[in-house]
Amino acid sequence: MRNTFAILLLLLSLTLYNCSVTKGIENKTVKNAISLQEDVINNPFFKKILLELEVTNDIDWSEGRTSFIKEDLNDYQSNTHWLIDKYETKGGYDKNAVFLWRKFNPWSSTTAVTTKCVEKTKLNKWKLKRDKYSILNTLIHERVHSFCQVHPNGKQTRVANVCDASYVAGDLAEILILNKMGVKERKMNKPICPALKKKIDEYNLIMIK
Image 1 (cartoon, rainbow, N blue to C red):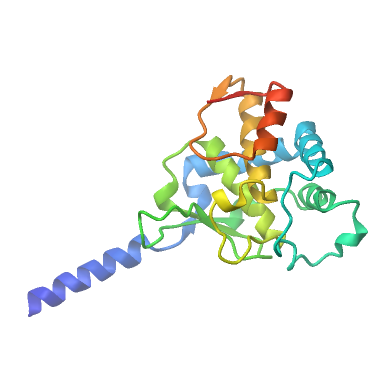
Image 2 (tube, rainbow, N blue to C red; image 1 turned 90 degrees about the horizontal axis):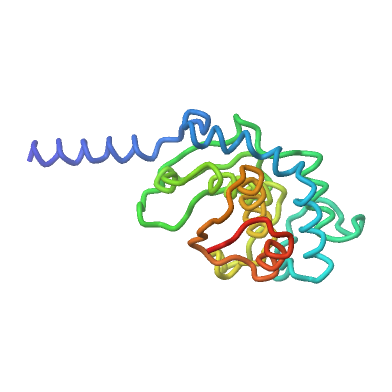
């Protein structure tokens, strides 16, 4: 009985330890990704391509995605103009606003969690075995949720939101920083908005495999 209790106590301790929240800057790759945010936001192509996709109605703002946004969107030329204004005035995440935590289920596809309208995000430690460019993608994506944009109820996957503003912005950020670093091609192991893919090809930014 004592042995069983000791084992259970040990398992509980390990679980609590693994689920503990730590600072993002304690991870070198995450720290580097955080530092890349402003490079992307200030890249002229970031604004240019997002606005071009807005003109052709290729960014999905439907199904309540804007329901929690605090600003009056009627004050902006378009929803994407609002988004760019938020990026330009608030910037990316502050280095002290990014945290790491380990989701209990190691097989979960969740890369990060951001409570809508909250100025911090948590990256899933199980999903950090990737480069700084991919993590930058996640940060730029999650930043949109910190601006109060949400995914529709019951539709939380990338496939269901492939042309959602958060995914488009994140994917575009990853491509732009790779282009700046001189990377010629990138294998994207995830679906990408077809309209964004066309823009990437149009401006010859990078070859997506």
